[in-house]
Every structure is written in structure tokens, then in C-alpha cells.
Image (tube, rainbow, N blue to C red; front, side, top):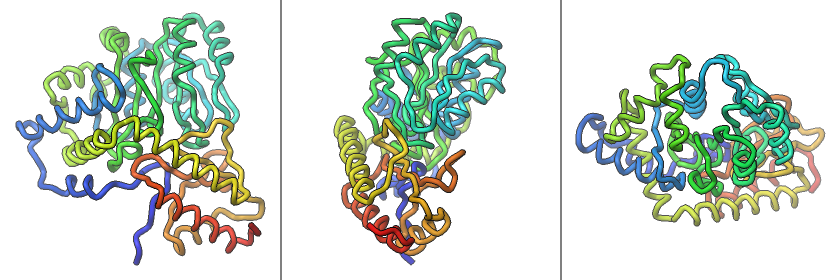
Length: 363
């Protein structure tokens, strides 16, 4: 049986080089060999984020990384602004509320991106706010946020920390942690980093690190002061996901070899090809501000998701993501972040065309 080809927003395909590294015999995580690997990973993560600041590695999903920011940067009852434009934006409203924070929500229609005016208005209405949370790519809608522009707006109007969910963006969309003045950014291993799920990464500015010292929310495993202390020794406070870290090491070397600017350009080119192909098939993209890493496509009227997915998956061996929230059964999501190249995108578009025809759509 032919292997399925993943075109999901995550997990994304893992290169053979990375798989090979992950299959090697386990290392002792307190030994010198692993420390040398971890030291290289730490430096290459800085390269990825475009920062000279620490980038901490946690053994958890991206959601765990986001929770770590909430419990490490604030006091109980602190107010934050969180932009909610989809399934994951919803999470960054519900989670901090559960943890005892006061959340001022900027609620958007799915497919919309936050505007400068909305951010400024929220800051004026909430002058005591301690942070603003942005989602660089809302995975459920394929919508990109202009983090560079909005970070500048926040800096001009507030001392609030700028915190970014970069889980479906870092390694695929241009991002400059230091230059743009971001204070905390989270990503995960299973998307732009071409590694299986299980690792989260948090870049912290000097302002964010200062906040670590005064935060009073409960945490233990997710205590970033412990992680930061261990980071300085190329170590981790707890047992790390050893095989994932060694796999990540190889993936980051591949990104270095290609060059991060070339990685961004490749993603932009492939995203343009996907959007052009979708238009040629007569389909509509959900987002008004489409991302270069995920494309959410509305299913044509009369097509059932179950039949469409069955044909595409089981006959043509291509797996795409399904809709979430209010768009369950109404759209599909194409992931093109990570280890994707021209040939794979051409294959997907051909298979999509054949699937639509078999579903009764006249092209």
C-alpha cells in the first residue's frame, strides 16, 4: 500500500534525515554528547527566531508552551488583551481565564485579521493591560496577522508585553523576534520545524525575563525560571524528549543549510501556488488575509466532507485537515508549512481536481 502524503496543518512531513536521527540509540540526557547537541539546538533556535535572547525547549505541545507564558508572566487578576479569530484564538481567551487572569477579548469573524484600529481601541479601553496576545497564523482559518505592524502599534501605545502564538508560523513566515520588539513567542516541533509533535519552544525578551521574577501564579513543571537556569548550562530541569531533540537538531541544521530567508521565500512561493490552484478549481479561500503556511478552503455546495475526504485520502493518498468549530464539514485546510516543495504541491492540486470531479463538481 502506498504511504499517505500529509498536507495537514500539523503534523507535517518529517524528512528522512530527521527520521534517521530520531531512530538512533538513545543518549543519556545528562551526558556530554547530549549537552553538545542541546547547545547546538539552542543556538539554532535563536537563528530560527532571529534573536539573541534565550529560546527555551519544553517537552509538551504548543498549547503547553502557551500555558507556560500565562503562568509565568503575570499575577493573579492581571488583565491581558487576547485576539480571538478562530479555534486557537478561542483557546488563548479561555485558558488564561481558567488560570485566574482577566481577559479583554478582541473577537473577530473567522477569516479576519486584527486591525491597527482594533488594537489601539482595546489598549485605550484597558490602560492597565499587562500583555497583548496575537496569533501569527490562526490555524483554523488560515489567517495571517501582521505581527510586525501591530507590535509597533502596541509599543507606541502601551508598555504591555507583546506575546505571540507562532505555532503555525515560525519557520514558515518571516519573523524577527528582536527587531519587531516581541516579548514572548511560542512555537512547536510538528510544523515549520519538520519534527514529530512533542516539543514546544518559547523565546523570551529581557522584559519578559524580568516578569518571571515577580509572577505569582502556581506552576511547577512549567516554571520557566527553572528552564532558564538549565538553559544557561545547555541542560533541562526535567527529563527532555531526547529522541525528539536529536531529531530537531538535524531539522535545524537543514534550515540553516537552506537559509531562513530562502525558507520564507519557498513558503511564500508554494502558498501562492496553492492559492492560484484553488482559484483555478473554482473554489473559495476563507481568509481575507491568507497565511503562507495554511490555506483554508470552503467546500463547494453539495459536497459532503466525508465523501470528499474518503476519496482524497483513500484513493489518492493525500490527507488534508478538516474544518474546526463552526466550519466543521464546511471547509478543508491545506498545510504547506515545513518540508514541502513544488512537486508535492503539484501532486496535491492534481489529486484535488480528480476528487472534485468524482464528487460531481464540473470544473
